[in-house]
Image (cartoon, rainbow, N blue to C red):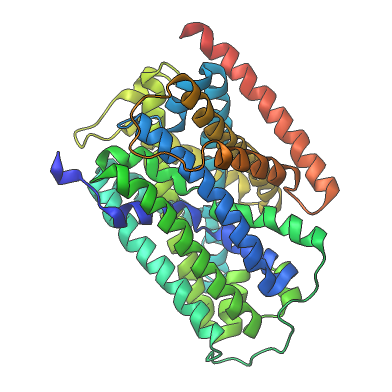
Length: 434
C-alpha cells in the first residue's frame, strides 16, 4: 500500500497540471489586454469562487473517501443517476477531452511556427498523445513523477519569465503604457468570467486521493495551494506584460505567450515560451488521461459506463479508460487542426458544462448535509451553507457572462442547450439498463 502513496507536492502538481494550459495563457492575455493590471482583481475574485468549489469537493471527499468516480459518486448519492450522467458526460468527459485536443493542436501550431520545419502539425500531436498514453499505462508512480517534474518546470519557467519582465531586465525595448488601458464596470464583470477559466480543474486531485498520504489534510490543502500558486504566477506574468507588450496587441494575439516571449527576449524568448507551451500540454494531458480514466472506472462500477472500463492491467491501471481518453483527445486534435477558432468556441461551450458540474458539487454538499447531518467528515466547509450558496450564485453569474460579445454568448448558450439535450438522450439510453 505505501509504495504508491503520494505527498502534498504531488497533489499541488496535479492541481496545477490541468489548470495551467495554453488556452489559459490565451485567456490571461485577453484579460490583461482589456483591463491591464486591474485584471489581477478579476483573477482574485475568480480564484476565491473556485476555492468555494474546492471546499465543497473536499467535504464530499471527506464524507466518501476512497472513491474512484469523484463527482460522479457524490452526485449519484445526493441527486441520483440522471444529473450524475448529465454532469459527468458533458461536464467532464466531453469538455476535457475536447479541451485537451485543442491544447495539443495549439501546441503543434506553435512548434511549427517556431521551428519552421515542414512537418505536418498533427505529427507533433500524435507523438505527445502516444508518450502520455504509455506513461499512464505504467501506473500512478510514473504519472506522479512526470507530473511533479513538468509542473515544477512549467510554473518555474512562467515565474522566471514573468519576473524578468516585471523588473524590466529583458533584452528587448520596454513599452510605455498605462497600468490600466481603460476601465468600465461592464468590462470588469465580463473579464471576471474570463478569469474563471484560469482556475478551472484543480479538483482533478480528487480521484487520486486514495493514493495520497494523509489525504484528509493533503488533498484540500494541496488544491488550495495549487490555486494560490497559479494566482501568484499569473499576476507576475501580467506585470511582465505591462512592461514589454502593448495591451492592444496582447488582447488580439492568438498566442500571447509567444508574443510575450519574443517581446521580452527575442527569438530565445519565443523558443522558451514554445517549450512552456509544450510543458503545459504535457501537464494538462497527463492530468486529464489519468484522472478521467479513474473517473470512468468509478462510473463503470456504478453501471454508468461499459463494464470494460473497470478492467485493470498488471500495473493496477484502468487501461481501457486510458486508451479511450487518449484516442478521444487525438480525434479532437485532428478536428481542430484546421479550425482552431471554431474549436475554441466549442471549448467555451464545454466550459459551461464544467461550471454546471461545479454547481452540482455545491448542491451535493447541501443535500448530503440535510440527509446525513451526523455522518463523520474529516473536512467541512465553514460558515454553514453560505459558501456553497455563494459558489452557486457566482458560477451562474459566470455562465451568464461567458463571453463579452452578446451574439457569441447567445450562440454558446444555444449550443450548450443542444449538448444538454444530447446528454439527456444518452441518459435515457443508459439508465434503463442500470
